Amino acid sequence: MRASLPLLAALLLAGCTTVAPPTPAIATTPAAPRDAPRLEIQWSRTSAEHDALFEQTYRLASARLQRMADTLSGDWGVVLDADETVLDNSLYQRERAAIGQGYSPESWAAWVERRAATALPGAVAFTDLVSTLGGRVVIVTNRAEAGCPATRANLAAAGIVAAAVLCQTGPGDKNPRFAAVAAGTAGMPPLRVAMFVGDNIQDFPTLSQTARAGDFGGRLWILPNPMYGSWTNNPDPADAP
Image (tube, rainbow, N blue to C red; front, side, top):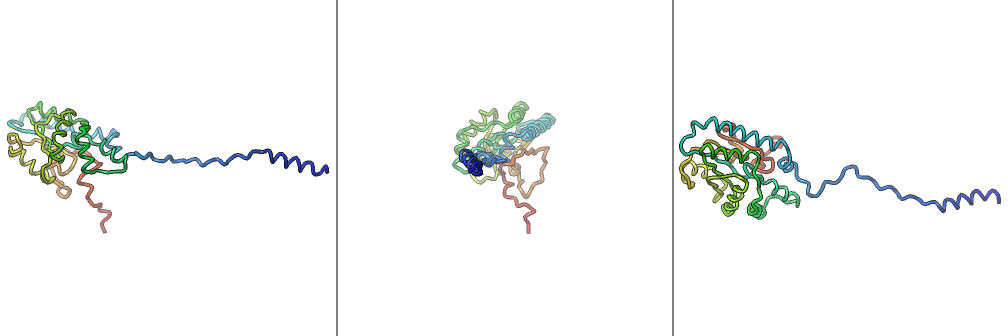
């Protein structure tokens, strides 16, 4: 009987002990939020490098334009693209990415009508300088003609004073509109175009992804746009058989 007492006590103690539940596993890598932007959008919206490149490009273009001032007689102007050149549409890209969608004509038309694009760094100061020196700011954009009134209002609200805004009425090729600016058939006198500014190689006369040589840093000024553009159709040489 005495020998069984320790065994009985051990059994009673075991019955009164509460067993702790297993500790759940701790995730070491938090899940990305559903609306996390793509890196190219994040870079365009938040990086110091993006803003510095725009400021640098517009300052260098301004300095060159001022050096040219004595030779800029008669009617002259500067032709600029709108989107991702003077107007920042990265919020549109951000909003589309947040719902897992990309560009669509309907969503883009709605964005244009919102008139919510802001001026990119350096754009207002540069376009103001063009006007101060006696030139005309001409925006040649592939926004549809139906959205041109909203585009003009958005530009004005952003501080971009344009003498003319030429939207897309036919094919997206800008060369006929560039020619119209030079010929005086765009609602203005014939203009000597001192500079072209854009973010797409097709924002410059006769240039394309396969015809790339131009007077960059002289008459032509290019700005970065990693979010979209004609470059997205370029095959990578590493993928060649």
